[in-house]
Each structure stands twice: as C-alpha cells, then as structure tokens.
Image 1 (tube, rainbow, N blue to C red):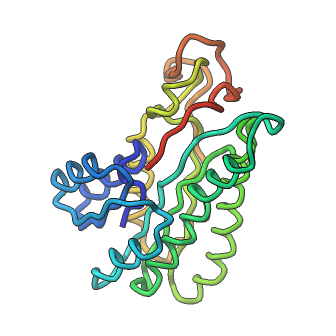
Image 2: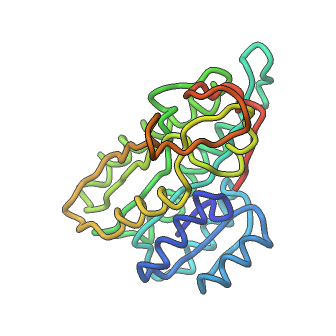
Length: 241
C-alpha cells in the first residue's frame, strides 16, 4: 500500500514498486491523478485524506495481506512562529505525522512476519528548518514514532524503515524563490524499491541521503535565489497528497 500516491514522491514509489512486480493499493487526495496512476499501474485505489481512518481501514481490509506499507503523504507549509497560526501547525502535524499513525493502524492487522513499513521522513527531522517549524517537528515526531514502532514490531518479524531524503525536486520545491541542490523523486522511489527487495532478516532503521552540494552532480532546483540549504523561503509552498 502506498499512502500519498498522488504526490511526486508517492507516485515515484508506486512506479518503482510496480516495476519490481508488486501488486499495489494506492490512496491520495486528488481523485483524477490517482485514477490515472492506478490505471497505469493496474492498481486498486481509493481517493481521500490520509487521516480518514474509515477510508484506510476499508482499503486495507480488502487485501488478503499487506507485505509493505509506504507512507509518503504530507504537506510543506509554514511561516515564522510569530506569524504562523496554531491552525497551520495543527494541519501540518496531522498531514505529516498523524496520518502515518492512522496508516500503520489500518495496515497492521494485514501484516505478518517479513512485512516492512516504510515512512518517508526528511533530513529536516534532524536538521530543523527555520520558517518550517511545524514540518520539522512533524518529521522529528515521525522519526520517534518509527523508533518506538520498530521496537514493538521487531519481535513479530515486521521491519520499520525511515527514508530520509534531503530536498527533492517536486512541485512544492519548485515554488521556492531559492535555488538548492535536489534529487529527482525517482531517486526516492529507487531507495524504497531497494528496501522492498531486502531479506526480512535485514533491519534498516533509516536511509539518510541528499544531493551533492557542489560538483558535476549537483542539480539545482528552485527559482533564482541564492545557492544553499537554507529552505526558509519554502514556508509558503505547499503540496498535498
């Protein structure tokens, strides 16, 4: 199951898993792009919010088993704390963190030894970004949730892995006024695909990676600002899955 399949990263994960022979269950907020992706990948799908407990339980309940859960849903939104309403903080925490809990709860009854849970986090979990306090807090919370969850599920043979990329060249990053080194979403999909091929005896707590900051492989994304990793200008950018 891929949660947030209509986002750039979620779609890349779905395509990567399909190429490796997986049968897919997909969900995302945008009904038309989700239907198109599901048709492309011959996948079952249901459109809706990743925080909708009934939706995810219905989708998961229709599967005989779930051998891999990929949570790639989220939003990138924020402002300096002085300017950021509490409602924005709540919405970002719900979209990025609460939805991961909802997805795991829905899928666990269909998971057994050998299954893997993959939560797409961010380097901002350990290197918080100014102007994106809610997003940084949500990703840090996701990392803590993953650690606690892994400790609970390891005795059952269910692995929990974080995938923690630096900036990724998606639509929300394209809204930035800055330029910064980024990776294509397909690279994140390849990491998730690699995890899907590992034997269950391999415990991989976190895969942390980023684009090179300089040199021939440093691809710049964004729009015309200064080079660097200060992503504060992204505070008004938003992407939902």
